[in-house]
Image (tube, rainbow, N blue to C red; front, top):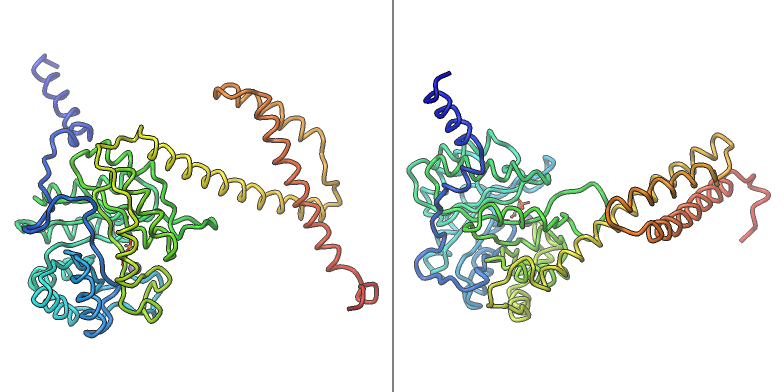
Length: 391
Ligand code: PEP
Ligand code: MN
């Protein structure tokens, strides 16, 4: 291979490397005329457009509260068939009314070429790609192709699974199609574990996205993340402390009657309270700031709790196994092995071996307690009826 050929293959490899792609991408602002760059940029509105009355009543109250961008799902991706799939195209007429009557910009979710075409025809001002679509490269490519030559901001929600490259891939597909006004929406990641959140925040993932794409605005959707009204303020504050640019919050004129996601929707008045309660630190925040570091500690503690509860679940399963096989709960050899192995592992990870031993001892004693509970429950069930205490 000649020197020229070597150089050009190196250039080719370098161009293929996504680091190079991040460095050369030039994004444009998503801010539409009349919207200033003040944090937080607020996008609010119902999960779904349900009726003309619901859309209009919510929009009027939000406009009165100073919100500039109204959201409403026209096409709803439901996990299972048989639920409310959204009103579809007729609801676009209601969004046009919102624009006309309140002066707000409107946004809706698109998942197919048809959605994009209809939304554009109807004058929708911003589009968003939902979490169930970001995971699907075919669907993202279809949307990107439909957007070629169009000039509209697109918000990309994080994929449902914590796979950062799928999020990156969606940005690249849109960018390659000529979409330059892009923002990201962090709405959390699904998990089969029981947690306080509907979707785990996993803050380190959007932090990594901000590192890779410092010029892309990051919004937080605390509604889908928390899945509960009472978590919205806390999550919004955490997002602000991490210097997020905006918030997308589900707001409904009568949340208890909502046709989808009613547990997480709040009234326009409650939204005002959330926004009034936020502390916006205007000095440039970095991930090293104290508040941001505390957020990371909160996130990691939640992660620890989740893992501990998973470990206890496995311990209970072991309890069942031991019972079925007539084995004693305490197996000292195994316990010794755990203590020695984990404490030297911990030392290699810059923690004191004694500390790891102490942590494992309390975990082990809780594990034993849980296995004893399992055994007692099973024994109780197996007791002949006549022996059971009356009452
Ligand atoms: C929504 O915003 O209504 C929605 C369906 O969101 P997500 O894609 O985050 O679940
Ligand atoms: Mn929703």
